[in-house]
Image (cartoon, rainbow, N blue to C red; front, side, top):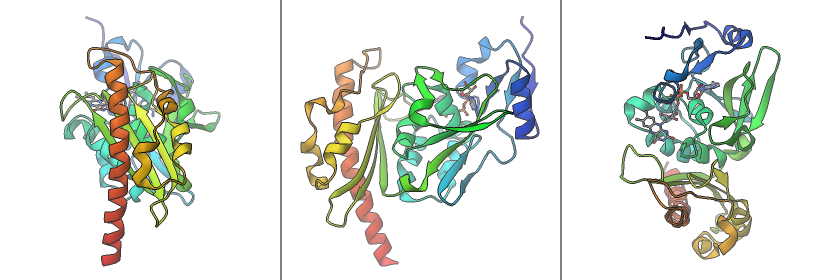
Length: 291
Ligand SMILES: Cc1cc2nc3c(=O)[nH]c(=O)nc-3n(C[C@H](O)[C@H](O)[C@H](O)COP(=O)(O)OP(=O)(O)OC[C@H]3O[C@@H](n4cnc5c(N)ncnc54)[C@H](O)[C@@H]3O)c2cc1C
């Protein structure tokens, strides 16, 4: 039987970065992807970052929100955040079970780079940037550039993701996340959609961000559709979809669904999510007026 890999549990981020700089070391956060998928392949040491001080929080930092790399989905659910984060929280509430959400981190979801990672579309509509650090430097990479393909991320062997950064300018409005799988709970998405909307009082769309997951190697924004919707009333949103608006998607047929079904689902849940988003905004406005 092969010897168990050495587990490194550094006491600080600096120590973790030094361990990464020394040579190949696998990174472990909540382990909910790592153990089922990578543990058997791990030959060298494993660096556990789940208990690093200062990485388990989400903090308001003036012009942005900073989500630490060890923040779990359960931790996110408890955080007081503006309504623009509701979609991200809904995505987290559907990741596995409560036990999974207690261990699994948002950053692990991104770094695993699965086309079906539910956190990715929800973070794309918040225009997330990824903070990456090594002993030499710290850099910010837009999420869209960070995940470059299936299981591929823009991370050098000596780097760690330290945080997700959400600009305050992208934290306005209301958001919704919807996913469809082959059953209601504990399911990998066949298609998922995240929407963030900023509406004028008249119901006219001022800002809209739409991202679709599980329908392309990497979840992606539908920028043409976003642009086409600006200035229209939310009630017209469904009628505005044109044939080419979903062309950034390239769904595959697999054991879970056919490509054409995935595309149909993406269109349908986008319309539902748009209207749900408007519903949330109305409830929020009436709750605020009662205060
Ligand atoms: C039963 C079950 C159900 C699930 N359901 C869902 C679901 O519905 N939707 C969904 O999207 N996912 C689901 N998952 C997948 C998983 O739970 C999520 O992707 C989770 O967010 C991963 O986080 P983690 O902290 O456990 O990552 P880990 O498993 O610890 O790590 C995942 C990958 O990210 C790397 N990594 C982690 N942190 C860093 C860092 N800071 N810097 C660099 N690399 C890093 C690791 O090296 C590894 O390659 C499920 C998993 C299980 C076991």
